[in-house]
Length: 161
Image (cartoon, rainbow, N blue to C red):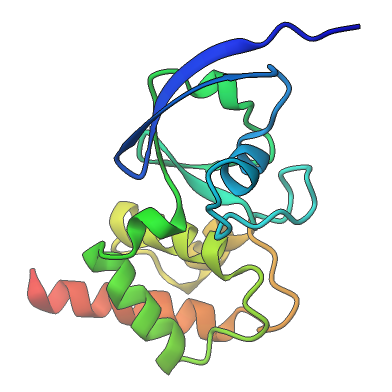
């Protein structure tokens, strides 16, 4: 049985994308296979691990659970699109200095989530940060460095604002 392809138009990292796609194509697969944006990692493909976390209209979302055609008119930002974002620059430096990186597989999704925490919850304590990170799995770090990195950026931003 042939699948009826659907047209879709949306922004990815500020660039307009227009395509005609199968309705069941997940955003993670589209970004990796069609746009060659491989920073969106695919882990569990069930929305549990957080490796595919990106932003859709400024809100963290799971690319493995999002059908690409549902992004009609949306603004999608991947880890590549956040390269020069000031908070992301701070987070990358803090992740390095706080030893929050090991294998790196979870890192793109973890950074997108960390950025959301810093911006949305600037006064979050360790318990709240850990709760917010609970949707992003990391098998290497034990989260201590990740939590410290987020706290470091929270403190830096308090000093500069």
